[in-house]
Length: 106
Image (tube, rainbow, N blue to C red; front, top):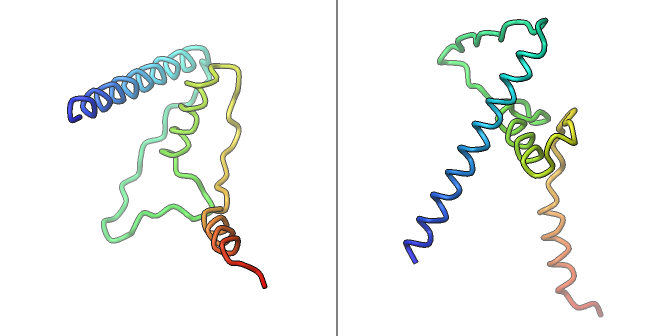
């Protein structure tokens, strides 16, 4: 059992590494195609006292990158992600529906 879990983890890591390498290669190719690409902005240091929390209505760059990578991996170059907006969580609504449907009506 432990061997199977280890194999699954190794395969997942290899797939993620391949995805990252493909994204890096695609970024390099895109940068070479566009000579007008401005230099990448440098990150400004954030004071240690200021907590870094993104607004609730925005998607963090890491999550956006993961979504774009998943779409690119599954659908190829056919689509282009224009924007990503968070949705309201439906888990609470689904839980309420399950509880209410389990009650018998009189």
